[in-house]
Amino acid sequence: MVFSSLVFIFLFLTGTLLIYYIVPKQLKNTVILLSGLVFYTWGEPVYVIVMIISTMIDYFAGLIIWKKGDNKVIRRICLIVSIVMNLTLLFTFKYSRFFADNVNAIAGKTLIDIEKTFFLGIDFLPVSILPIGISFFTFQSMSYTIDMYRGEIEVQKNPISFAAFVTLFSQLVAGPIVRYSDISKELNDRTITIDKIYDGVVRFITGMGKKVLIANSIGELWDTVLAYDRASTPVLTAWLGVIAYTLQIYFDFSGYSDMAIGLGKMMGFTFPENFNYPYLSKSISEFWRRWHITLGAWFRSYVYIPLGGNRKGMGRTVLNLAIVWLLTGIWHGSDWTFILWGVTYGVLIIMERLFLGKILEKLPGLVCWIYTMFFVMLGWVLFACPDIGTAFAYMGNLFGSGGSFMDDRTLYLFLNYGVVLVVGIFASTDAWKILTERAEKRLPAVVHWSTPFCKTAVFLLCVAYLVNATYNPFLYFIF
Image (cartoon, rainbow, N blue to C red; front, side, top):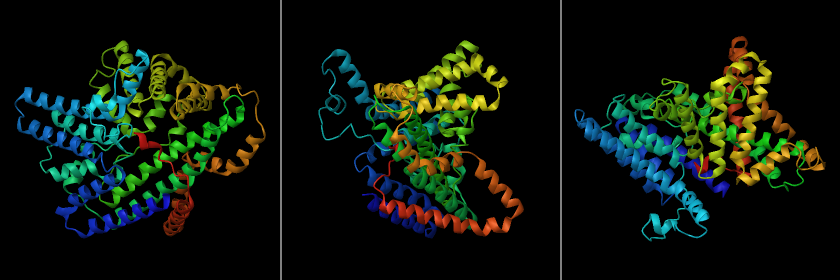
């Protein structure tokens, strides 16, 4: 399965890029649209219609908002229709089962039958299967309508160009969240140069290496530890597991973002950065300025600031932050673990805004970093575990509930995964960037000529790994 997927992706990417470079400029957006639909249909042959519906809603809403520029009522209706319809799609496919399960659990019987309630008795749509990337493309598409209503962007009259923006396959299913304003000019007129293509290839391979060589390798450690009996998992083993997941999710998600940004460059686009060494942060607030940057920017622009931001006193600021972080948790998944995860971050950020931030400013940087990573890793336990009970049991293992500090399995895991743990920790910092920049200053020719060979080696290693791999998880598949 992994090998067949690899073959398809390789043929798809090379074929798409070849066609894209050959066709004239006026047809490039058509290639993007068709390739995006093919790519999504390969993964979700049924739910591609959901993405098409979201795209059509926002295209026509934006067009009417532009045409009725002097009619505030119609403009507002179009905005409301866009937001309600997109959120309805998101709720129906991502949260309806969670909502129904909780209602049924409270009632003690089945009050809501998902298929019959939401699809009028038609059972052929399996709601339990989530449309890939629905949280990304609905937010992305909806941002266009909101910005149009605000008068911050110009209308996109060409339906193919707008659909190309939504279906841009490189970041369609895992981000970064690219708003229309980020690429509006490039969508209409972009230049493709050899330098951009080269930079894009280098960035793509960097992301591929992160995902395949580090995230996949270290993810097996987390899965192994999570499968252990919670009643007997030693402290050190539990910490090895959570460190592994902390590294896995960073290299998995940032790797996909790098691949998307690289593919964007190959096609003439400049996508926003999504990560900035988040594990170097010295506060939770700083961590979220560095982690999933485009999601934070989306909530800040379309939720936090419209609610009043920090302009209406501390009490209102606290309320606004609470709302944003509750929604952030809900956005990530339809489970109480995600909600509690978001609420936990909200509480910590509110505490930093009220008093903790001033205390952290007076403490040594190392202490602040330990505080930040401690809560980040506890947060990842909530994020990764299948339910709250398992998450709390795992947290108990971190502090000794398993009855021992280490055992033979601990040593075995460390010997098997020690190297990739060290590599992952090193690569999650900016040390390599600093070393590279110094080398470029002292030995620019060596760096220039060695880069293609190093990236080729990384690419070949990734291919070799994938050909023989049975473990290739996609952590952001559910978002």
